[in-house]
Image 1 (cartoon, rainbow, N blue to C red):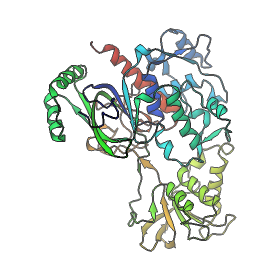
Image 2 (cartoon, rainbow, N blue to C red; image 1 turned 90 degrees about the vertical axis):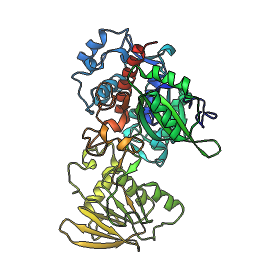
Image 3 (spheres, rainbow, N blue to C red; image 1 turned 60 degrees about the vertical axis):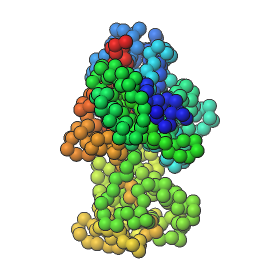
Image 4 (cartoon, rainbow, N blue to C red; image 1 turned 120 degrees about the vertical axis):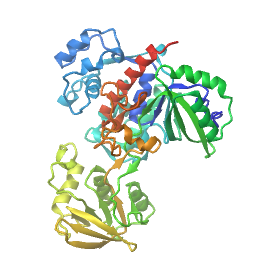
Amino acid sequence: MCSAAHEYPALNEYNPLPVIIIGNGPSGICLSYLLSGYTPYIKEDAAHPNAILQRKLEEAPEIPITDQDLAYLSEGLEGRSSSPVALLFDMLLRPDTDMGGSAESMLTWWHEPHRAIPHLVLGQSPPGGAWNSIEGSMITLSRGEWMGLPDLPFKDWVRRKRRHLRNDRATAGDIAQYYQHYVNNKGLQDSFISGSMVTSVQKIHTGANLKSNHEEDGAHINSDPLEGQLKNASSAQGGLFQVNGLLKTHNGRQQPFSIYAENVVLATGMFDSPSRLGAKGEDLPFISHQISALEDAVKKRDICPCSDPVLIIGAGLTAADAVLFAHHCNIPVIHAFRRKVNDPGLIFNQLPQMMYPEYHKVHQMMKEQSIFGSGPYEGYVSLPEHRVVCFEDDKKCVFEDKNGHQMVYTVSMALVLIGSNPNLSFLPNNGIHLAVDNEKPAISKRNPIDIDQFTYECTHEEGLYAVGPLAGDYFVRFVQGGALAAASSLLRKSIKKPP
């Protein structure tokens, strides 16, 4: 018997589940909502500004969107995502947002319990995933209304909280609270198990394989009735997934669990494993790969305005957040990055200045503050087109510029903020076989998991799905389309499944 089943009866290996979702961020929450019987229909009097889409929607208004042909509905749609279903769902939820409008959602939601599919959502943190680990005062890149999930607009939640949106954007703290409220408000909490870390996912094809796996794990169970259930459940698609992990219980201990599912959805996001420079000395104790280390050092007064500079490496938004935080605290900063400041691929060159003034402020600092510290921004030094050669024990950092010239700085701490990658260590071979280029690691932006774009089922593994950044969708407004595609596919499987 699953050793954690006493505290969480849902973690019961005797009853294979139709779906297990690994990850409880926005993707996992949205998919759970769609699998809980909440069904989207087109409102009777709704009219979409896209005339072609409107005509398609009028063809079968009585059929829920999850039961319609998503490929047909999304054909020809254009927008800020490369996923056709992401564009479709976003256009239904926010019909004219990219044109500056504020039209209400085209969808009305009906709770139809008979359509619900039993599932579990496993996550190490409370619902909201990585949003729980972001410093609460950080301002989101996306507009607040784009952070909302179906049938509970974020702006309505903010209004009830009597909060104020700055430039129509929200704080990370508000977003984390909103996602936890969403799970409770929609009655999804019984499907969510926080404090659960998945350690392995493997395909089980026969009762014999199952039995040997349990014997290896040291579990002693009466496998005969379980084997019968597994054979029946696996007949539809040729196997089940065994999901093993550790559950943090109420007394703080970690207990192992092992559960089975016909389908597994990967919704783990891309923030589990920070990218590394690969420079010598990168594991020294004064170096961190998370912005929270700087926040903690300031709170503990380990770093103050009279300290040696903080080295911030990276030219993305997380690095910019660290620069802003340090600058606000009057902490001296050395900011090193490998690109030119006018590189068109730099994120700052892609953001509207009126909407993101603080990030354009950082970009201005990067451009105007010279390597010798001369310029209008006291306490800040910009090192464009520089790379780290090595870190040394005495907190010295050796840099090299584009011409091969080296220089040395002494710092109080270093933050390497150059992006992050998903942690798929719980999959065989770290999930490399699932990627578009299955000879290289699965990396969200450069080598995402290969999926069917209308079901989000993995091309190389039947019954395994990937949503969110793992599938190439990075913004909350677009990850919901992946949840729609996966839910639609899983609902069709549920209908076809023999009694």
